[in-house]
Image (cartoon, rainbow, N blue to C red; front, side, top):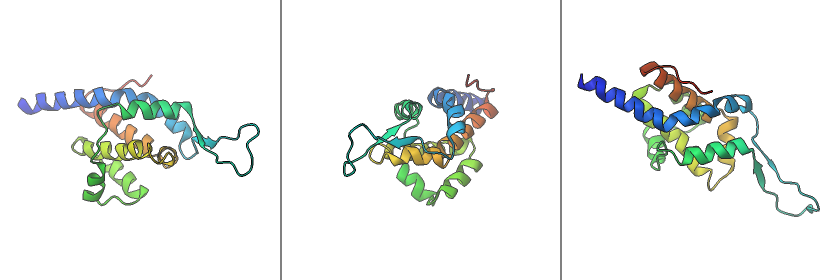
Length: 154
């Protein structure tokens, strides 16, 4: 009985932190494999001027919301080292095989791209293009639905 109560509390906590992010799944599906930014090309910008990326507003809203949720793990490099994650294929493989006991791995993968994107903006675009954000959120949703009930992302 104690295990059941613990698991139910865990699922509630996970839903509280990840649930609001599920509404971005349709946008991530639509933009998977493509760039979510462009370089600013304003009027009177000279050829030798420095350009800067302009990100999709939905991506920026997702990043802001994700960075403020309890899923962010500043120790994500340890997760990458411990699980020998070196490539996007490694990330996708771990995401695909994750269960509720590997929730920390999913959080770590999400954290890497959200937190590193603050210094290296291309990381957010890379996570959309390589489907890392999408696969991580879909797996989290699948895990929560398995242990609780279907999640409405409406």
